[in-house]
Length: 471
Image: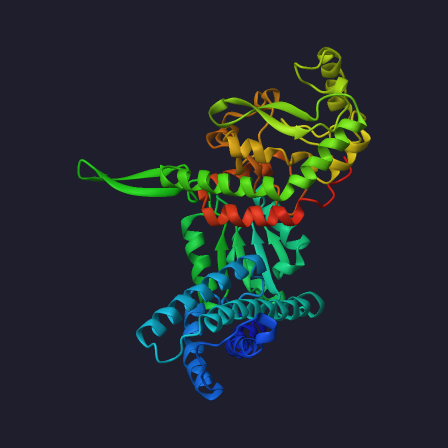
């Protein structure tokens, strides 16, 4: 463990404590400015000294709750969005504890305003303080190399290539690759450690024997080296252990999206899509007018896609192509449109595998180029989600001719509803091959949770109106 990580982890405790106390003081001060918040008259009065005694008792309780919720992780590369959610949840738990305590000991004080205001200020102050600390920590990581983890990669395959690319590309992850070797020979590893030092080892080589791996684990334990490995597909599966006629039996669960999981996801979809429609209604209206005035043809383009269990449905999008170029049965020039699209795919597609992506597509209208560049054309898919043909999060739906090019194992993507957004869309890369996109979607299917859906949707909101690559 790096000294800088220990330092920043340790300093978070007093900083959080100060932020909680500051939040309580702010709430007390705001309550005493009635002309600002219109609190007249006050039903309860109490001295600041008595109030601070209570605050100094309550603040350590919040610190304990933060610790239980895992908010004192030592790594420098925590995700600020995930941490923000955890801070909000932990602070809310602290609020519940305070409310129960005041209910049992009413003589403390009974100001509902102070309780709620202190909760809001505490969450805000702690989030801001931690964000600033992370900025400092990551600045030291990038510019000075303080806290960087020297990592050795073992294995030569596509999975390890992807890991190597990510670690080299994203400096904020805090890794420096010191070497990449094919096999786990201890002599080679010892030489690398003596020459350049090793903080972590990541193994992704199925051919390494159990004996070699056991020796490597022992070596890492003795020399205080973090050991990680990328598991096989079976090792990452979800298991459920039961008995059959007295014999233990293991069932591989394909996805948590069964039973209550499916109910929770559908409820989330209805709520999120309804809110999305309401919030984007001005944009929907303006875009509809712009599409109608720009070119002849319908405003909404219904594109047939394949959904879960191979069912076909129509994806709603704002039309961004000239109507006579749209591949749909409603187009009277369908045959010409198909021929044009096939020639463009053959000459200008920039994607590998069963999917295509046409660079500099000449079929786009003026308005179409703009709304497609900023993903505005996708907004009508909120209605797909509301009506139940799609989910907010899931694998992207593909056309029938694309699905026909799937390998058999690719059909796992059809086991759940397709999504408006997904793991691939928020992965930070816009040039994913189909196989990489498939692996991310399978990870989502196997590890789904409602929190994961919320995080992906929030990340998507942040990138929704960013320009796409010029395709």
